[in-house]
Image (tube, rainbow over all chains, first blue to last red; front, side, top):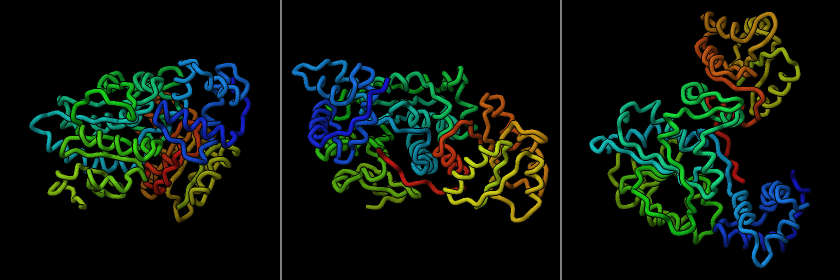
Length: 290
Length: 129
């Protein structure tokens, strides 16, 4: 059941923006009313509210139902993703970043990749498929392929590795569909061997982080835009602290921000910008641009 | 860029034509594989053929094999666009010479993403909610 659409009043939108920021640190810019409406109308229906105003009344109670609060935050978490989303990033990964990093780690024979906003898992599974398909040299290496997401339902989805025909249609090359998925009813499920190599955990980037290992490559794409500047800066500082000194950071388009240059230097690979910790980038093989 | 749409459903040809026209392609059409081979007698050849599987007279798989066996046509990019979704069928189509495979029903952005994978269109600007 989906509740009737509601046109959000400005004061309601402002109140909900504050509510969401306090609980998730996600910042809703003006003009995102449609996003609230489209994400929360189904939630209102699920909880038996006739429209969004009723849903918000329930959230405004002195002690709102914690399950409802969690569901609303969950629904507002962006899950827009696909296999090989933004192909330029994956071209850069395959053509330059992985060859460079694999060469640097050839003695240790280990490689770690973190998908920091892993949603339903397509980004990390794309990387896992690429490693298996294009880099036989890492066969037998210790691979730490880790995805985290704020949304627990997305973490569960990612762990299951089950995707609809619509999802596998979008950006996934047919040979990879054949090699790395099995059909199960109407859906396609990531092959067990690949699925077991990928670990997914719930994690809020905006609150204190658990202890994390150093990562060689971090993907943190299309999530920083949902945080305000202060939180964004904090997250980038923390990423810097868990990124190997010679590691690589991938951000989404427009997410770099002016202050990034204090901590990272940008490297252009084709049409894609990737980032490396500032003090280590000079002399790297890919042609850093200070 | 020019796309040949091969499908026995006129409605489906119109849907695909509308999408690829919006992506900047010129379009030519055929109702089955045999008709498509006739269309391909004319030069210049299309850059890509979007091919249904199940059609009367000559099906999509036979068309793909015929294109690959013809030295004048064999360099053309071929993508199956079909309701056949079993992995065995996808393997057969790729083995016969199809470059890509799109399962019906599909969304506009899925078709665009496949054409992007094939290097036929440039990446679209990232749209973020």
